[in-house]
Length: 127
Image 1 (cartoon, rainbow, N blue to C red):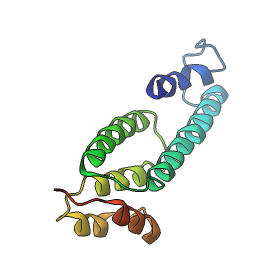
Image 2 (tube, rainbow, N blue to C red):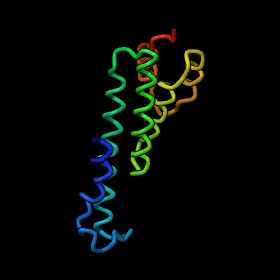
Image 3 (spheres, helix red, strand yellow):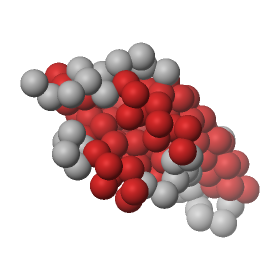
Image 4 (spheres, rainbow, N blue to C red):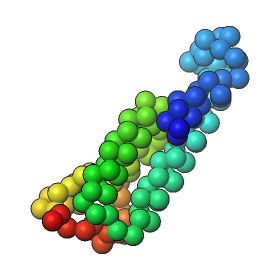
């Protein structure tokens, strides 16, 4: 449902009703791009904060979360969401194996130490 709604945003924000073809430099296009960036940026922020608030992640929970994150990241990327790198870095931490987690922590650049620490505390080891 969320993906369907996100994909419909450009049409909902198109003030011209599709009449001018969404010319790149038009005021209508600027309006649409502005609000699309605001909305998708908010989705990224909310999704990251929601993931960080999850108390624990089992191995199977991490697998499901990674799948969901990949799907949403793909959609948001298509829509040009700002700050998508935060979600992509968080995905790296979710996907990391127990052995590779420390290396993944060092590789992420868009998350602060507090966010990385939260992810480390919520991980349950693989059985």
